[in-house]
Length: 205
Image (cartoon, rainbow, N blue to C red; front, side, top):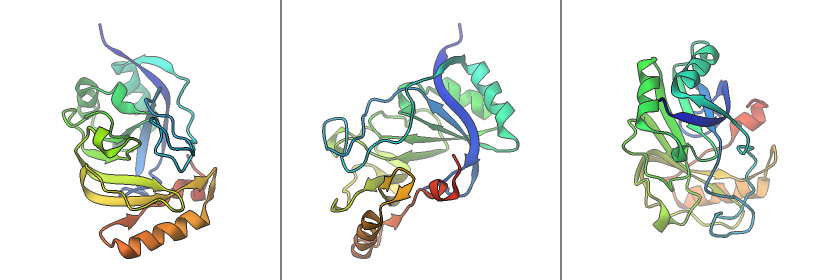
C-alpha cells in the first residue's frame, strides 16, 4: 500500500526569498511542525518573530495523488519546493523520486532539525529554528536566519554555499528597525547577504 501524506496546500507562485528568489515553483506545504516560533525565545522557538504560516490543517494524499495534484498546478513550472511547517517530518526518498520521475527538480525549506541529506534533493535551504547544537542537517545550498533588532550574526553549524539573514516582518509589513540592523550586520560580516521576503511586497503567496 502506498504511503500517504498530510498536505496543507499546493500552489504555484514565485519564490520570494533566498538565492532562488524570482523563480517559478510549485509549493507543497506539509501539515505539521516540530517548532513553535514566537517572539519570546524558548526550546521550540529561536525568538524574535512570530510564525505567520497556517500549517495545522490538511488533507491526506497518496504519493500518486500528490504528484497528480502538483502536475495539475504546475503550468510549466519545473521545480517543486517542499515546505511547511516542517516537511522533513513526512518527506521521504520515494516521494522525491516520484517527483523526479515526473520531471520535476526538488527543493526543501527545512528548519534543520531533521537530517534530509539522504532524500536525493536538488536544493536544500536550511532556516534553523533550534539551537545550533540541535541542527541535524549539516550541509545545504543556502542557510537563512530571520533576525530581529538586536540579534547577532549567526554562527551556523550547517555548512552552506550561501549564507543569508532576513529581517523580521510584522505581518505583511517589514520591520524597518530590523532591516537597518541586518544591514549593519552585513557591513560587519561581508560573507553574508540580505534576503527579504519579497513575496509579501509583491502581494503574492
